[in-house]
Amino acid sequence: MTSGAVVDITGEIEGQVRERIRSTGTDPRRDVDQVRVFVEEALTRWEHRSLTGAVPPITDVPGATKAVMDAVAGFGPLQQYLDDPEVEEIWINNPEQVFVARSGVAELTTTILTADAVRDLVEQMLKLSGRRLDLSSPFVDATLPGGERLHVVIPDITRRHWAVNIRKYVARARGLGDMVRLGSLPAQAAEFLDAAVDSGLNVLVSGATQSGKTTMLGALAGSIPPRERVITCEEVFELALPNRDAVALQCRQPSLEGTGEIPLRRLVKEALRMRPDRIIVGEVREAEALDMLIALNAGIPGMCTVHANSARDAITKMCTLPLLAGDNVSDRFVVPTVASAIDVVVHLDLDPRSGARRVREIAAVGGRVEGGIVELSSLFERRADALVRSGGHPPHDDRFRARGHDLSALLRSV
Image (cartoon, rainbow, N blue to C red; front, side, top):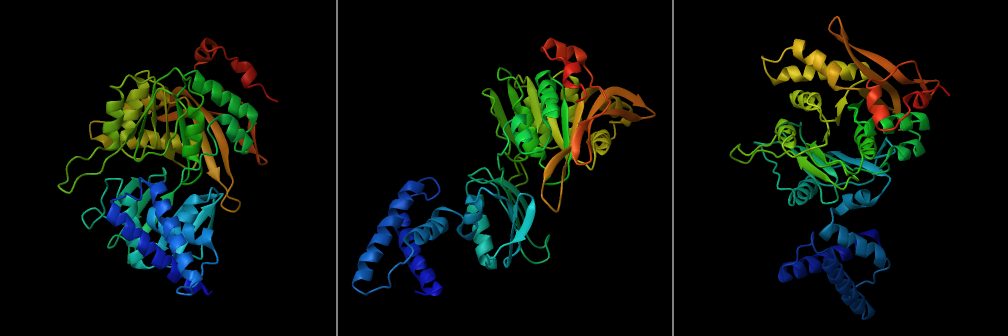
């Protein structure tokens, strides 16, 4: 049987299954088991007909089952990449260019779509999110049922084709011990960060796109004592915290009338009213940095991420972003607030050739400002492809002692 025949067979069976779904009122997204029963029944009927010669036989029943299930209850040709645990991200530049990233390395797949197929797939993905995409709102951020993050841009913002990105949160690290196992940082640095988070220090995670900031944030969150109440604020849900007492908040896009938008700034403000012991902001990009700093400066420990090229750049950016909040916010307030509110910066990088994600630097913010510049001291730095102890010292020795941590032992050169 030719590959064309396989497509025809699965297409006909798919049509039968879709008709059964319509007639029974089954929701294929919510009742996958029932859809699988419909598919198996349709395949059985087809095989019985093939015995009489009425239709060609199916040589690959498992393959046909998966193809129909992916088309009806999944996301068609993209489902194979969503199911692949090694794939971290999927993106479509145009219908004939579907890329994936495995271990940080991009590759062009053999999948070829049509413009209509891309639109249909995006519409399916947005059905359960409650988010919209049209000429008045040409961007969309949404979370797929499996937890993946979807971002789409349509013309005329793009030149011609729909640009689609699906970022999977591959949870390879749920604690700092996992980061050691993955080779992202050495055991001594992990032990220090574990103690710093346990002691209530405020941590800023920085790095470039796809350097592993969200993964590191989730690993750091694993060191938060389980008795503490954690509130997370994100544009779309990505973090999966092990804490029992945790509430996750995400932003909301405006309605067709332009009302009902919930920006990240609002989430941070609302989080302060929810009795948090810790606040985690997925990523600060704009004026929400001010609200984050105010929360940290009010004595509520927290963590967040920011795009930056180094630990120094991350602190500089945190001194700049709050100025977007309004003319009444000046650097005379922001700079000393950053110096006193942020305690540790963990900077990550991504090797574009190997796709390796590693901690490049861990720096301490001592609280001092000299000439309008926040002073940093390096705790760990990368030398000869290894993260090693340098001469800096973190703030708040008393917090470490109160939690029973011997800071001198943690930072002793080995």
